[in-house]
Image (cartoon, rainbow, N blue to C red; front, side, top):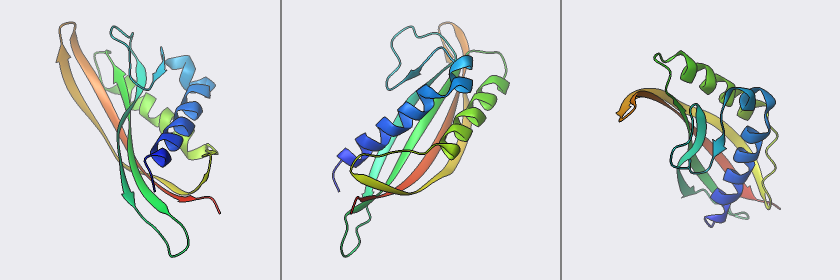
Length: 137
């Protein structure tokens, strides 16, 4: 399976996150790559990896991808709440992936780290998902 499966999955995930009214009401944006100087809080697409998972008659892939939540609030609560909303969006979303069948989408890991920049303290939340896709039959 080609990297296009990753691209198509990312498009579907991005569209679901950006279209959700509850999430959009609490963010300044949903980005593939956040622009320099983006206002907090926001959600951005993170790292992605693909591992072949073919069947006898169908090409498939196990795709791991990250959703990153950024906040400059002085506590972790905002980033935790935003992570919960983003996770809820993906759990209830019907993700149409052109040319592919999405078999499973599961949260694999979630974590928060504190970072520093020239403006002060930031919190970065990471949601890591695993998706199993096969080429549509």
